[in-house]
Length: 431
Image 1 (cartoon, rainbow, N blue to C red):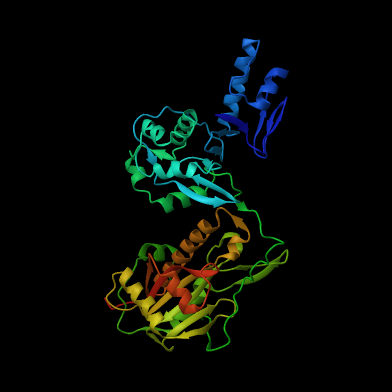
Image 2 (tube, one colour):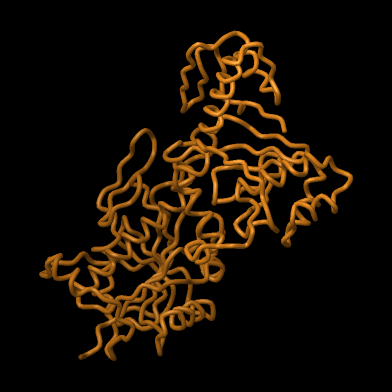
């Protein structure tokens, strides 16, 4: 097995530095410094103290995730500070259900949310090796299947993959068993600790792609001017929190346009539009990451007094409803999905579909962008619940929805703007 420093590590006689790590070396002799530069498998020293010093600093470099492990089949690259516990595996192992193989900048890699490591497949012979490990195999069985490969290299590869948790013996804890692949991968990649990608407001597309405007233009057809509420709500925030609950049944008398316009004004209007460094931002009743406010509200109106059935887009700056589509089979499918998902007996009077203009967030934030969108969605839904409770309406968030169906109805690109949440609203049934 060959070892080498990660490319971004700069080795000096005084220590090693990266953009995030600075290690200081003491009493580093020229011989030890030369050995750390080459990282030979079996360095030769005349002085036993130099040998001890070499292995001390080598372990230190491994512990801080600065060493790449290379076998004849793979390279194992640490993504963060990590001490790889090299093991001599016993028993049968197979590819973990949490392992992901993908292309990255022209390289084929395998990674897992179980450890901050990445495997680079630089040798084409590695592909049949991993294909064989789709089922449990012992090291002895692997060696027999790949007699054309160097036995020592196969052993090293097998041991490294077990240590990196790319291979598993099939035993899972109750905690691990309850994680689905996509959930755990999303969790690990949107938080710090198990990857080395930049995270936060990196503005990586600034100067390359224009940022999206803060307000999505409204269609100039079927505009309904909405009124601002004349009175303040009498509910206290404590009352609204205590009485808040999901109400799936709606009253016989439908919700009114007056109630709908008040609800939208109190939940989602633009209070202020401002520009900072040529970028547009807004302020709204609910908190939004970076003041970006990526959400659009679309209303599938089924039964609302004062407005005909149809699909409408809420313009939060002008406080208007813009007709997007007549009530059609696609709109009815969205209502049917909402009814089914909420175990409701009839269609909701109004279904509010929350879509995200993803690039509003992706343009600025990296690694955590979609996680931020989901956090924003949570606070918007809570705001909707509290306002609906204070207005004595029937609110209910829905756990799932069909984003492809929404895009077909609205005419948006799935990767540019698609639905991320649904919320049913109607009149309160008579007790």
